[in-house]
Length: 256
Image (tube, rainbow, N blue to C red; front, side):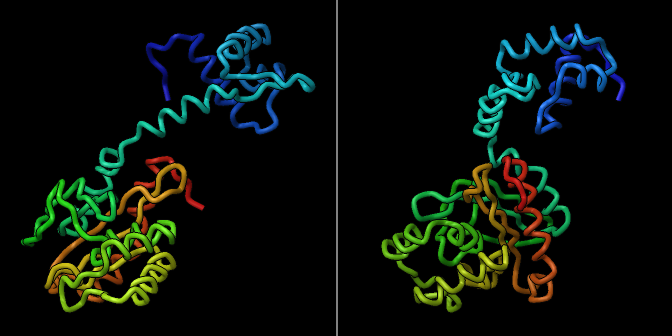
């Protein structure tokens, strides 16, 4: 890519950083100079400046240069500043365009899920959800997707405090059956709500993880049973898992 309006010394420093970061063992001045086709004195001056600010460090025994710890501080600030709602926007809009159904993004808060984004799709569907509204965890696909990745002690505490109140004839109401459902969700990578929260509405959701690998949110697609048939839900499984992974990667999560 052609570079325009660049400061050469800054560009050289960034090129050196990119080159050094690609070598786990580090690089010597001669290796860097040869790799960039510039003289060693220029390389040394740039390295000295980067080292002064902590972005490059020199191994005392080998003399080789490697990435400095200042990058950890900068990267951690970046990761902490990432907002799941803004980072998810492109994925949510793509899901809406592909499915024409309602798309939700939720986060967990004190034993409930909170809708932080909703795209209405292009098909007619009346739901109780709206941004800012809370919903139960036990009978929603997003709630299951989140609880499946919380510590068992926290799940037990939520179930003890909130129970498994009936919302429809399909709501899971026993702890044993619910814990088995969460185990299935963890194994499969997605969660289902088969008219368990609202009659006539089916949903499929996937978890979203942060840069630590902890559960951060859940993304879902919702539609009427007329459209969200078994066949369609089966076809959406991998798409939802990918959507969750894509948002997670935007938050700094690394796919295993």
